[in-house]
Image (tube, rainbow, N blue to C red; front, side):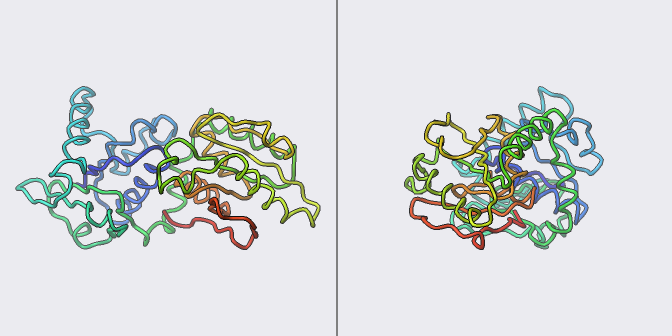
Length: 296
């Protein structure tokens, strides 16, 4: 049995992280406990219908809620990178941990097809780190991942409404992810873009379609309030504001732009939508620069 002891960031980060373990578990037929997705499981019927348990994949350690909650709190803090135990490999009689702490610092992935994983005979193998990846099996189980992470009907209805509203205003929907918040400090604020930069990038994308007579409509999603007056010269719709609805609405666009983020990367991966990362220095945009994210 493999237990993931690393708690990745928020929704998109956990979709990325969890998906790699799902395809690895499916490919190598091992039992998996991923204890840090319960917050988001409510968004997907595959989890609420407990279909995932049929695949030997579990979000809980035990069905006793109080006991399970206590174990999760213990795992969350005891195996945190801030503590000594989270940064090191160790092997006890019943539990072995593989920590990717140092490789994570150097952006080095741990391949989940490693014999250490595939040939594991330990009763419990804990994997602690962000960059555990299974590049080999992602394409093979792409449809399986899409089935698991298809939102519940009530969320899909909101997604469809937003996309329909966009289609009624234009021919080409350009998803714009305006990431603010924690990006003010990340990478020294390189990707914390003001409204005027986003507006310039939107115009640069639009220029690619003017000659063909196609009308662009921009689907703007942000984790902060949007000043709509800034974009009044553009045709646009505003995202729902709910993290899941915005994420899957972006996956229904024709093109995506935004700063580097797993949020737009998941939308690109799930919906096969061409994506372009932007920053403060980008001026011209060509459609040939866009790429669909094909692995996580």
